[in-house]
Length: 137
Image: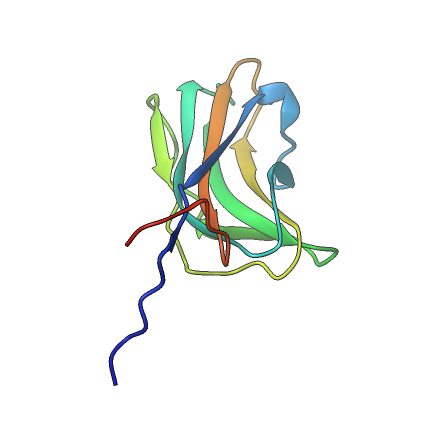
């Protein structure tokens, strides 16, 4: 039996959230991007544009929170190695489809003295299941 082709198409939606050292709390999920029900994250990244300067190290993970459930701190990227250079941590797409409005956010872990500098941007790329903006074919 052949696969049924669908003609509906949609663009990937990009959402970003900028944050600084003052916006994050150690080992706490911080919601940054809202997703609608039916969303499927297909990519993105957490870019550190100004290094966080805790006394010993600064690490990030990318997690999510579904509805009123507790946040999962590492859905899309586990706690990374110490970020010692400006760069990005990629979102690893899981194929997870959100059945209700949810969020994607970051978790920062610092060791030693709290940072007095640090800037990042979370970019989340997603599609919405069943949505079609135009047709192909």
